[in-house]
Length: 229
Ligand code: UTP
Image (cartoon, rainbow, N blue to C red; front, side, top):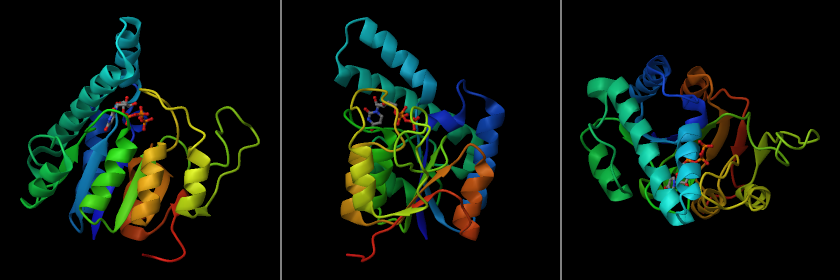
């Protein structure tokens, strides 16, 4: 099976921590022993800090996005270091490069690719590009909620939704560099058109990622269309 895993910067920790990278590397190696794995790392709090400073310095959103991308690639580099010889040595800069890199049999780890999106969308397009069987979005919340649980106490977690429902929920998200939402709107639209089975889950514990891929066990949100194209 080909699996694309988007690991949100928020789950990698507020500050880079070698132990945390080691834990994720261990989990990813376990999955890669049985499947072809692509990882897309987010930028998290540090990316947002850099973006905020660039904004204060008068940069436009596209430049802020480019700075965000650099930070996601730094996280990719740290994860590659933690995976030592098991990963492709550098983060591919685009989808084509990622596809060629995986032919070496190594785990491919990359960050963002172009302004105007987040690594959720990078992972969704990559999943479409490499014809992945499963897209996992490991984030710091338990799944997709009816509304944002951080600001709405009446928000309810959804266990199973269609890509169309996902699009409807995330379209309410603000679109700017470093914006916070469970999944970016572009990612949702890509999931809708590609119909790739997707699971959004709490990835704060790397064991959850292993459980979902190897044991089909999770308490997140499954996004699946009733009819496959
Ligand atoms: P992230 O994917 O980490 O965004 O990329 P995020 O919203 O912080 O995601 P989580 O919450 O950690 O999962 C950091 C920033 O880098 C830019 C965007 O500005 C994004 O907010 N970026 C990332 C791009 O412009 N293009 C990409 O392909 C990826």
